[in-house]
Length: 242
Image (cartoon, rainbow, N blue to C red; front, side, top):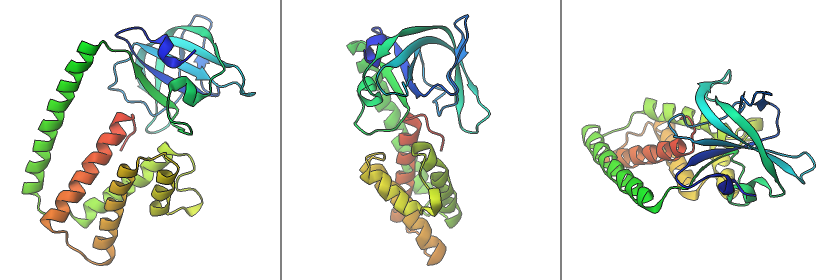
């Protein structure tokens, strides 16, 4: 059994990895997923819970119907309230095999959909139009803002420092510097190389303005603005707050 086997044609779902510590499943079939970095804008028809077996042999798989996404006591994390939770079966697949993700990927959230081809095409056209509108807005902002201030760069760097631990639990631990953290996550395949490069653009430009009193030229400002917009877009598609 794999996650996609539990999603019918036209449905969308989120698969969640858990060891069961905060997964609530009441006798009446209601419950909660526990606290996760979840995109509240995602349309979900199902929630698939992958409950890892401590022995690593047979993992329980539950399916529930989402009712609402609510804030948890942990900042930046949310819970999905569910009904009609049922045990769909067990699987011997590890998390990456179950969700058909890259070997070694540690993201505990995977969005799944089985959208008909015509609907998928309409979505692609809609997304392309949205990107074109966004690109046009970015150009307008760059033309109207020839520089990026040190304060802005410092704020973006702080947001990256808060973002990285939500991607990798060991990020920034033990005094790890942000540059080394980004490089390590890139080498380990946790961060896409192009996103890591954009994060380094933000941090290097921040260092230049902070320690060398550099003023960004309009072209440099355009690059930094585009890099930050791309990082935000990447984070949002993964349900991460930035």
